[in-house]
Length: 527
Image (tube, rainbow, N blue to C red; front, side):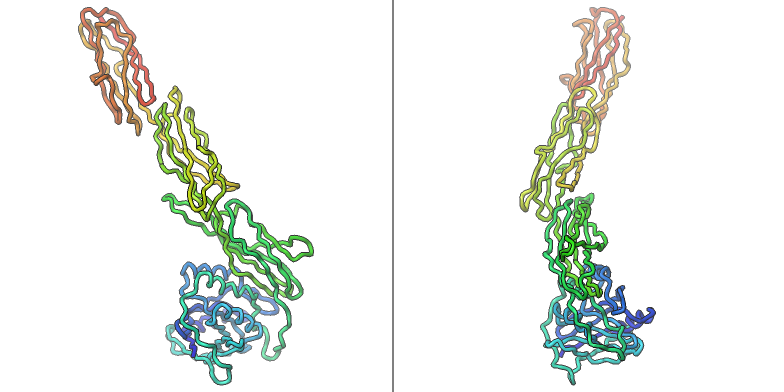
């Protein structure tokens, strides 16, 4: 025989919430678990509600929020039923309650309904048997077991006048994410108008009406930056259709500094769907391209003129997108050279559209191109383009470091990545600039070379303007060449003989390497 365990604090919590309202009416979901033939009710989550002269119904936004908390494991357990109050009217199942319970049990035979009359201190649990007849769990009068909030009150199904009990089902694993969504949105599906506004003295036969019907072909795929139009054919309802709404939650892909792909979830929003044609029954809403930046969850709700509501389950649109990455963070390009790096387009959700590639404007003397300029990732794979950067070796070309932005665009969607470009250089100082000696002596000039970061090229020296062939010079280097990687001190020595002509001479010292050319004028006076 199926049994029901309820934490005593659950009913206390519902009565306390009811006492805080003016009319005593509250509604919400029961959270718990199913183990074998036992159903355990561990918590009651009150929700906001909409109400009118007919009754109350759960607010759609709260349904979405509870669903998310369950999926994020901020709430422990699963949805195992629902509750509402009949303040002063007794704990019983109205026709509308039975209709709600019937829909819930389509998804799980373990769904229960709790009706509480806070004024009479009465609480009853109900279910439906296989003939859709109401069955009550024992324990109609509220019978607390001690003051301990962890005390468990065991209530067993009545076997006296009720029909045969619902057959025991085998133990089931926890509900999947999709089942959780389905169970929660069921309350929106039936647009539950809960009993509780009718007194025991004014019970009438329920009105005969048909709920609105929604015919909708789910949209399963979208592409980043491209608007998505959702359509639904809505008919029926008491008095006809009043309006149709679309509730959706959109997200957007984001890439962390560490290169990890994640999503940012935006709050649920509700928009009015409009008739495609006057007098027709097809409604549509277009999600703008700015909100198609990641996967989208949505459901459609129809309201008839008697304010009955029906909603679809929550659908998910998988939005395809792409990542743009440079395979290297830094590219070193010496003057007069060309370097290359790969740019990768990685698909998300089977993205297979052309991506147009471009680079932003570069500093003077630096040329950057991407080849090919348009690439399309194959199904299930990534695709690469080649970034080519050249630095001209003429005066005025930029030297130093800058960040180059590379853009990828497909439709209205655009992503970017960057690569740091380094153009190495060095600076030269010579002192003194003028030296005076007599014949037979040696003139010495001190040379300081300060390279920038990443400069590792060979530097050569040439000297012109010497007075005669008898005059020699050296920089104490093999072949007058040196590889520069850090600050370096050198000495230029010019030797003379007694045959060297006297006079004042303007000498030209040329230092070249890594595309960088320096020319310095020195003065030598021989007496």
